[in-house]
Image (cartoon, rainbow, N blue to C red; front, side, top):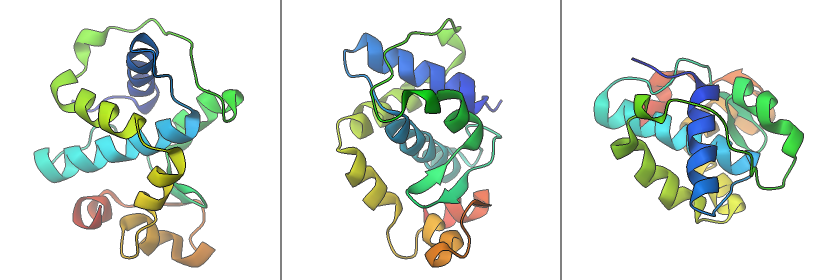
Length: 141
């Protein structure tokens, strides 16, 4: 069963806030991407059905981006009411913990690697805001 990207975002934000390591929307977007990549490459399924687009600063899940963009670059410290038991914390939490500790711009660099799914679609700006197919994410990360 795939999650909603917004609900998964709330889970991630709650975890980070409870661990006293709140994240920005930019970090959230990259963490969502890395979770999707992990699910595709290790489990063979999507973590969420929402599309991921190639934007200037890397992969973005528009539904989640617009839901949390009001925070700008500041850490999101709100906590949301969700049923945390519905999430695969064993798979998700290690990714969240690893990636939230990195500088946001290092996360951007990681998604911008030459030959990555984002790079293939973004194509030096020609593919700005185009959807990154899940098969590219699975294959090229």
